[in-house]
Image 1 (cartoon, rainbow, N blue to C red):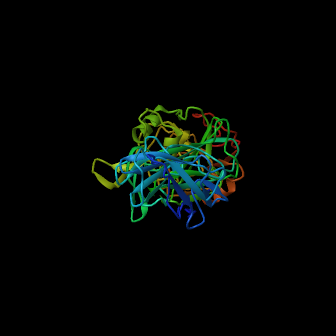
Image 2: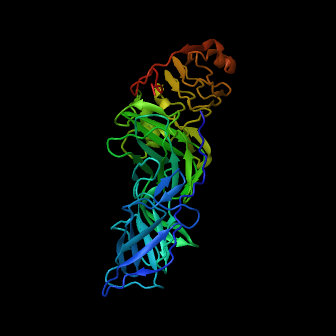
Image 3: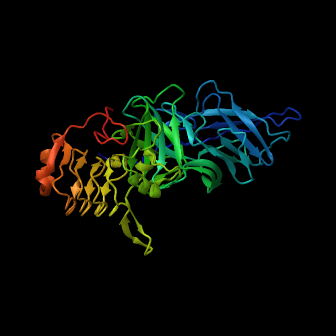
Length: 454
């Protein structure tokens, strides 16, 4: 299965301009109107049209700052438009041309200004809207000394569609704990918005449709995130009913301001499990204990499907020598007895050399379809193995002595692929047997794990 993310530039930026200052001359009032319209390209800010245009829409509000004054400004639009007039007041002090104006969309009571930057929140909980950003999600700022405000996007992110029906939650998460949302302090450097600081940072962004709804198949949705680099890629998690699934995109990508990577059918190939608590229930307590030691990122003493999905390797630095280039397996030589839950580690593409070597009490293991290579001596001397189950219809590449000294235990492969496996794994040809995967199973079982009816 293909695990790539192609980052495509979609200009969603509001270049806003206005021709004249419109200040109320009402005595004792600081009421003014600020006009925002598109400049280049012919795009504005809030409502996505045909996947490329983003317009202001009725109900939009911004917070405007000038000196120590601030106020809420609201548009009078009755239909989405590339030009919008925002009207409001800045305390009791009248504003005049030449004085600085800063503004932020969306309006927030808690947004603050320190004279050079605006502090506000890019939310980690976002409400989906078909064909668009969620309402009040696309963070933009403007800085001017006239009533002309040029709003610029702060965030970038992902534009995605789904291939399946009934999905009611999508979660974006970096593979290395990167901050994607939170309380941000934003300034303008060389004419471009820049995130200067993040507090209360969030490592994931959850997108849900309006209450009682699900995502529509083949429709476009957007996730807005803080710009930055996801060096190890990212994971998307999906919730469908009580089925929890994940898909890993393991190429390095950059979240760039005003650019949204396009993922068509982002859920295609996701592995689903029938769970409601998102906790993997291991048959072998020792396997759980070892995994929790290294990969329990939230400290709850459990391994979740989300935590499993971001694991890339079972090799860790050999701390005794403090040589980062020396890697040792967390499982090799241990007394683990079964690891059929390996199928939930959807971020693994390789079982590296010596990963399970010397696990003399290991009786069964199920290798997920995302594994495309099994390294040298990966299961060498697992003398108690009673079965080895492969879920991929394409034989993974296999290293030297990958299953050496494992007796004559059967190697189970999807029915109809026996000949392909026998050709690719000629050393083990006599041990290969076909089996028919069943529907989805409960966590901790060993029949048909990793398969469901979706």
